[in-house]
Length: 52
Image: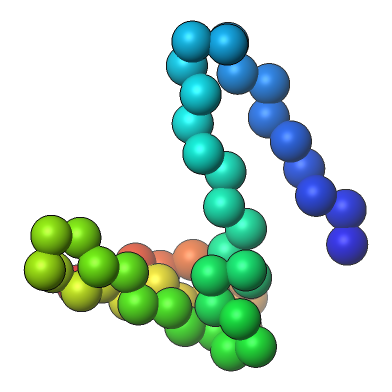
């Protein structure tokens, strides 16, 4: 699988994370933001859904 890169101005760095790296062998990952847990899910159609 080829990783895509984005060109960003040097002073506007935005981290790029691979969704499959976050979900490991599955299709879900939990993400904590200041004590609130969100679920990131990859659908069968290859779309991302983020829910609280």
